[in-house]
Image (cartoon, rainbow, N blue to C red; front, side, top):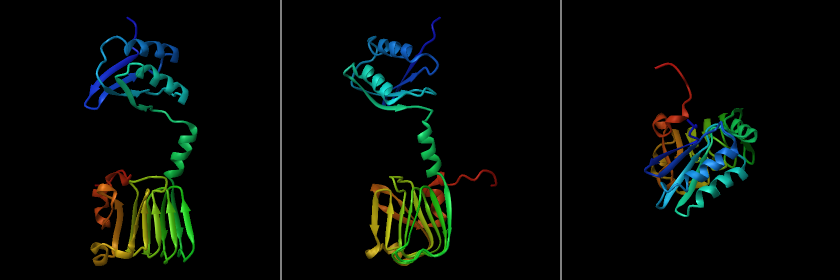
Length: 222
């Protein structure tokens, strides 16, 4: 019996096409063309292509998309692969790094990292921290912090004493000239995060595990 190269699954969001990652790309293209023209796929449907452990160039992805969308009622919304390029791997490694800065961040000084940062010291007014990931201040935060540079909207900013002038998370900014009542009433052990409707919100550090449960990577204990 000939091996089935494409498995189709219906979901509430449309169709998922799981493509065999062991056959040649030529065989895959030929089989995909047959699948989308055999009369079993109709109606306006969103399609996701899962490549498994097959790496495809952008040109090959475009070719697969074109084959599917030759059926005018089908639209490829996403192409997913379990492998990444070396360049993407390096970028992921950079953004997952954790840096520690010991000392005071003075007025006019900028500390910039690609991943997370822990500052063991104060951030003075007009001092600035920029990070691709999370920012943790074990001291007084009275300056400017930009967490999640590059669009990471899951990033947070935490501080032992929280009185910043500006908080930026991802592409969103909060100027602290008219602080929320919560910040006026609570300045110790506070963190900021991007909440509902892309509004920067604040809570006690103890609530981080509830707001960002994936932040903890510690294994073991109870």
